[in-house]
Length: 213
Image (cartoon, rainbow, N blue to C red; front, side, top):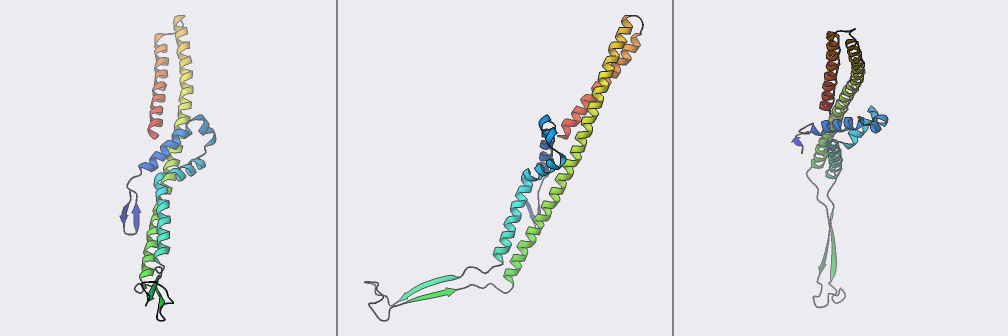
């Protein structure tokens, strides 16, 4: 899932981040979410639910645990033995020379090895943490840009719809004047063209809004 370069972990694609942004914008376009979901809340949701960021967070925890584990000595080994133990009874009291032996052994790696391994794991954990911060910042930036674009498009659509309503009323007024022989056909056509142009603008804005998601 990740490209492992010494000291760095790089996610191959930003698809997951862009998907999170699109889903949040789609939800915020619904009345229930629009009334309650602020930009700050949307950022928190995106950071919390993005699967790529979650995987990086888990990787950091694993590497930090590894950094602590590899810097410690391995567990000592306890050895138990018996000498001159009778095989017919296995009794320690049958012979005076019977005895038990207990041994404790500890493996010591070469000088500096534990420190180097712990340091390497710490460096890897820091590299993943840097990647996490960078991708989190990228996600927030994408979300803010898309959020502003969505607000602009929504406001523009509201303005154009209002103008379209006014032009529709102008068309009806021009038709009324034309039917009463007080207006010309050219005035009716101009009003219809203006109304149709605004309708095209609404269609274009709707397409832009859909492409942003």
